[in-house]
Length: 153
Image 1: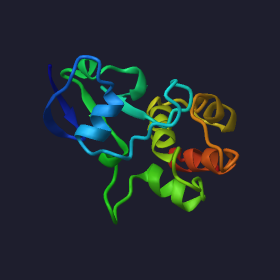
Image 2: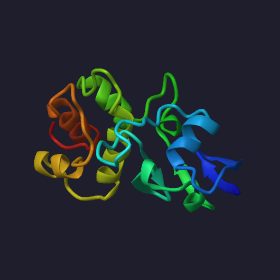
Image 3: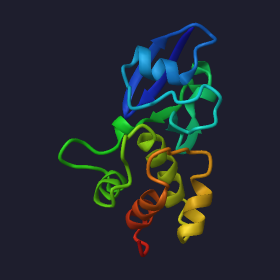
Image 4: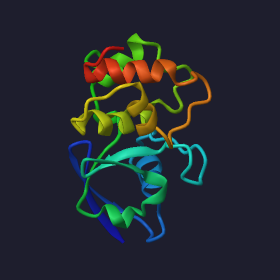
């Protein structure tokens, strides 16, 4: 089947079997390896991307379900030398260590920030529930999100 979508602002048309997961299409067909497969069970959030402006775990979405969608991966945020504010905040607060969870964390955090809700530590922690980090203990990740949101970090 053919799937047409806009990925990181670029119209794409991809041929894929009907059972192809979006995460696999993004990684294997389009070469967007910032989208990580961490658990294969939709638990870790490493595969989180934005689809039509909302964070989704791309391991739970069939590629065909993204027909006509706008998909943004971590590669679609910022550029070398001009990081997205969330990327810069993660860098500034040391909100990453191995970096495996970072793309999914950033894509989920973007949802929190764009919700317009006043964020505090508890809301950020609740909003990132479903994104696992095995390195940082979340403290610096929360600080990064609050910094990017303009809250007191």
